Amino acid sequence: MPAKPAAALSRSDLADLNAFRMVERLRSFTKAAIELGITTSALSHAIRNLETRLGVRLLNRTSRTVSPTEAGASLALRLNVGFQEIGDALDEINRMRDRPAGRLRLNVLSDGARLIVGRYLPKFLSKYPEVEVEVCVDDRMVDIVAEGFDAGIRFGGTVPEDLVAVKLGADLKWVAVASPRYLYHRGQPTQPEDLRTHACIRMRTGQGIIYKWEFRQGNDYRVIDVPGQICVSDTTLALDLALAGSGIAYCLENRVTAQLQSGALRVVLPDWSPVEPAMYLYYPGHRRVPQGLRELIALLREEIAAEALRADNATLNRVASGAVA
Image (cartoon, rainbow, N blue to C red; front, side, top):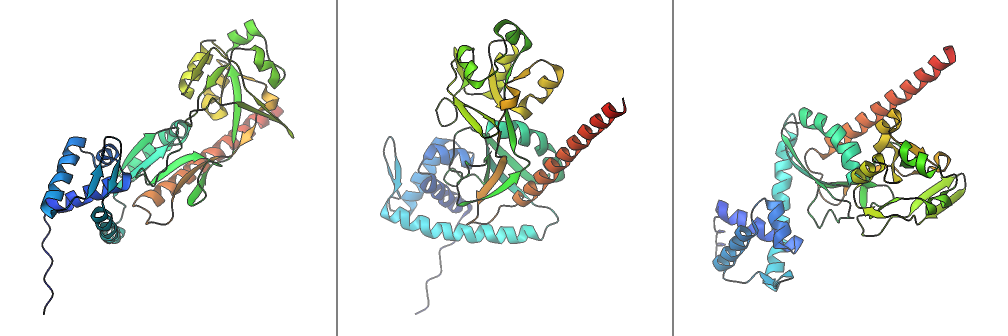
């Protein structure tokens, strides 16, 4: 007896099946709606319509959780295989094009947004106009796979070991900085422990803890739980307060290059500034690399290396000029 032909799927069917797959993976209507670019109510309506057409409940919903039923889990497993095949087919077609096309979703910590994405992404967008890029700036340690991101940018040492990590530039120097006005009134610390008698602008990290400032001189490593009247969760705000003379801030040296050159800020304890791991772009290696990501990685590494070379040459020129003078 011949096999019964599969029922034809409409555009609405495919959209609703993909919506269900997204909710099942993220276990959240809110997160799935954000990724799909629709409202939560529209997504909920689509899932209800799908369940009605199929005649079976796919998701168990409570006020706090979403989980698949047995039928839903089975369907999601088959759909993931099917949509993976569709994605691979589209990628194959795109590889026949001259340039990549599609959408990239990046999760980036705020320092990475300021120092890398904001600086180099415009050139990527100009070079690859058919690639759409969505950037989520978030200092929390996010599971990029579970949250539906294609890649993330974080400091080395914080990237999960099961992901592919690509180093972006050299290791990074951290500095404590203050305005000349603050140092005139409060004095210059000479040891890390001196900070305990100063007004420090404390920082709450994306993990919810208040960061303890780290200092290193040779093999001498010290961690100081600094005091302070104010605690912030944004480096830009901390630097604004430091510029206003409210206290000492702690940040990447690259974040204050212009302020240090102009004299608006000065490094506190310069001999104790530690050098820590560079930033890395990371992505899951167990699934296909989305269109545009390889090109983005290549451009970032090329631009960062070129900028470092320009900086080195500028330093050599200044040294040579001083020697001639």
